[in-house]
Image (cartoon, rainbow, N blue to C red; front, side, top):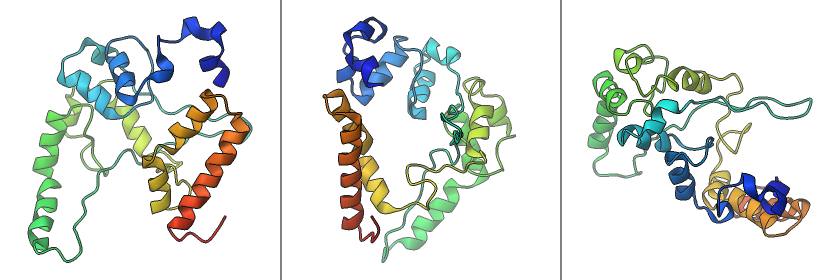
Length: 214
């Protein structure tokens, strides 16, 4: 992977300036038809639908590829769920709970399916066969694959897989842990050294959160 992005002999197969792209740069390139594949959030597709960008009609969702080696497997599941939180001791807890229940009502969920075609999907078994989902033009190439994804047998829920969600892993992810590690490799550090420093960083953050292991 390092060779593809760093060796001049592969320069012609890469978009101009790709090594300095930000996340928005990646989105813009896909929406402009400059790259053909992206492992990205649904917001990118939703933007194409909202803007009536023709790229939406040629966009297909694919399940993640199987990993390499004899133990290779597909990791998928859970989707990108949104959560509601109520602050402990809140003076308006009852009102907050009423809003949460309202937003989860069938009527409001169906409206969300309608106005966010190909982006907002059911969190449970109910909803997949509702007309607001079925008649979605935007979801033609997305819906059934996404349904497979969120119900995948691997039950993959994110970077903390296969453990339960833990705060220190979330802290690493939002601090651009993976981006920084790959950035070190592209900057010249040997992959084995980048992994070593990444591991040390992960252990340090885990201990800051009170994790006792190594």
